[in-house]
Length: 142
Image (cartoon, rainbow, N blue to C red; front, side, top):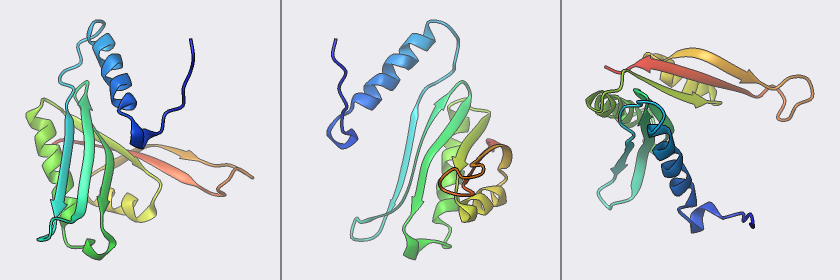
């Protein structure tokens, strides 16, 4: 049996792996709905200016990625994306959401939306990058 490294841009193998794992887990434990949530905002020309990607499992929404173009920040797009994702998660039976970030500005953004820190990872001593920290946050869906 051969192991292959696969470029993410060239393959949907990561999605296939996740689907196989979720199918296996369904046989062992009730987990609610496993759904992808993908939201985007485009300008009048159709150019992507903001987006959110997440998934639901075991009653939780995991917000995997949220991005807003630098020139579009502080205009409410990020907040609208998170609020919409939380609403959709509630419709899918989720009770809570979680995410992680290592960005200080994002950390303040999420806590301003009602997320609370439930864990951290922090590099110690000479670990590179020096002083790097990742926060894990959660909130109830509204």
